[in-house]
Image (tube, rainbow, N blue to C red):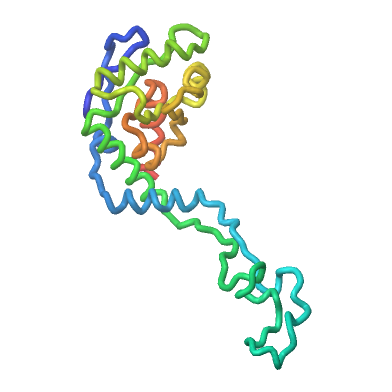
Length: 219
């Protein structure tokens, strides 16, 4: 296991927590990660695009001009594809972009992404962002800034904060901070990990995530 220092809101390093090797020291399979990310982005597409063909557009019941004697090519309708306002040929139709991705593939890709971040020292753990029971954005940003500076990170780069679903203080303190994306531990995914320079777990969220990951591996 890899031991990592838990950062307290006071800014000092407290106890250490062990990161399981089966989750944070897994093999980084780049093709697998790419496939999972592409599938996730494809599933986010609405697929509601549509165009009208010449049978759906309005008008065009009358010939634009007579069949013979004009010297021009014969035309049957102003709603033919070559006319402005006419139907579209082979246009897009509503469809689903969802790709089938087994749960084991998603889990393996997430383990690889987290392992990559940890290998570069970009996985951090904090005991909390605010002292007390009142959300304070200023205090939470100060804790996050100190944690990032200790790991060589800079403020302004994308940061993923993984908080427990019941941790309202963290959610309310960081939900409006630019460049900070807050996720629940059961929503953690490969794309958001790769889109962020640093992944910051709260201690409570890390415990819940590890338990959930191990339970899924046993099934």
